[in-house]
Length: 334
Image 1 (cartoon, helix red, strand yellow):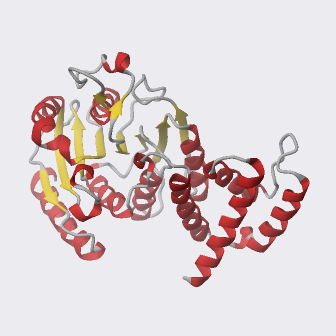
Image 2 (spheres, one colour):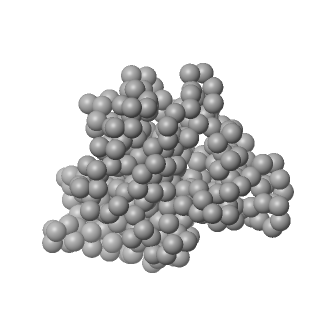
Image 3 (tube, one colour):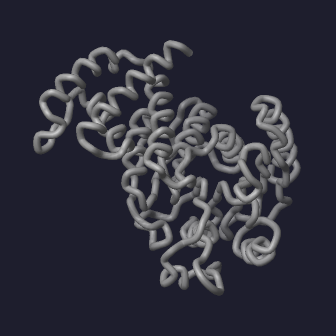
């Protein structure tokens, strides 16, 4: 742990030195630092950073001995620095990385529902830094003897977040196409076999575009997360699957009373997994995992897996969840 802390602080000093010299956000300096280290050369544009800073960074990079650091350490350092970037640059809470336990739960469900013997196109339309998608894909590849059957696409309207996602993909040895666009406008990508996403919670400001959706609000701004679910359904292949992290509030209560009947007409619900209350600071932020299958081809309705992850005590909670998942799969799907 002490060794990692030392390495992390060395990287942090490199990013802060570059940030100060270029007068840019922490995220921009972070992306450029890793680009410099990966390319073995400090990028200079229009005299910035200046010669003094280049000399200083060269010595700092030398001490890092980047080329000989284990890939796992590089990924870990970059993940922590990404978290710092989101905090330091006062970014939206929606851009915080998804907790690892959620990606594990989604990967376990995906293993049951998706074929493992053909190439699958998977899209995340609210990509952010790519934390959720990469963690899920790494687990799926690990379970499938490192076979990579996945063609990945990420969409986000924030170029800075996509730059972070691009570096993270490179560090994770993941190939992905990234598109900077509003995911509620027509997708520039083929219809995917699956969508994996931690949906941003909040209001969508473009009322004119929201009018194109059945889930729009009668008055005022519409919920972006509801519009995104509708957009996902429109774009999924027939019988394609969606594995989404959604606000718990859309599944019940006043919003759920309108939304869920609409949803169940459009798709086949497969699973709703409530996440532990302690994972979220207040009840308004509580989330669940929602899994559904688009209509079409051999898609059929089935009993829905309804369960709750009772605690964050990783191993026990995951074993318990996996037992319920296996029981449901054997009884209902298989």
